Length: 421
Image (tube, rainbow, N blue to C red; front, top):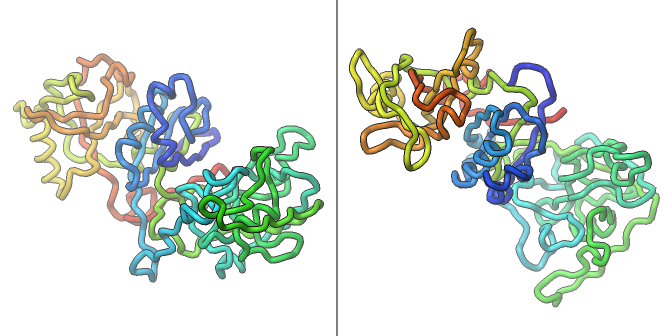
């Protein structure tokens, strides 16, 4: 996905976080869900279930926070699992909103389910045969900030944790130093199998409450107004031995999750990769040119937003840009205008080694009444591409959908698998 050195940083921005993002806030504050830093480029993979307006919020926030960083993205569709005709009801599982305390908002210890968490069954055969890790803890907290429940509110998977020991003896760094990783599922506590335990009971037993309200206790009752009660499970005495299983998807949730982060399915959000330097190969991965390079006759900022290319020259004659696009799309055998974008030549290009090194590519926002193409572009000057009046040529691009076009992946393959390892 990228050429050059430096460490890539992966992240996931949920639908809720995208609703909180905005260009104004991002000028002074980090973008929700995106690790702040000196990023040179971003590759984004969006879930089609997220409204376009929220994806736009994220893009505008990234533009505001990192104006000089290059950005490329694509929509990712899930692939139907082999041997499964339809998604099962388990694919859509989420905790009940009443009678149980399985969601983060209903708890006081930071643990619980959030939208986008992977769907898993703690007693599944794939987990039973998975590799395990045993870790002993001598004091609390252990360092896991959030566990999420499995189907039916049973079992617990590590979803958030402190990734290192901040100082010698840091209690919150214990899990990381003992090899615990995101996606691991609790198997046993002091040798006792807890895979089939209720999530609430497990959280009481483990009692890893590093970010909880100290005046509150974990879920000690559930139900409307506390009419239904349960006896809290005593916390395990220290030292305590926790055994974890490595999560490996057995197809559950795969029919509905086209995205993965660190090998875990993600839903209703955007997976991203941030690179420290400008990436020149992301557009080779995402799109390919069609038709000839065209001379631009008229262009400028659009009063209603974006940048508009009014007309281009085709065979020595001036014509509306939209008409030219229609003709070349038909000649290329395209059945739809979905995913079509327009490339603008980067200034002072001496030797182009890739598409992105020569072209700045922008998606289309629409067509004017006169047949101009409106691009999602703030203007050439604002994008660092020269004066607004200096646009001399353009190139049409189509999505890479052919066999093997996506960096060796088969057409329609599920991706992206992003990892910081």
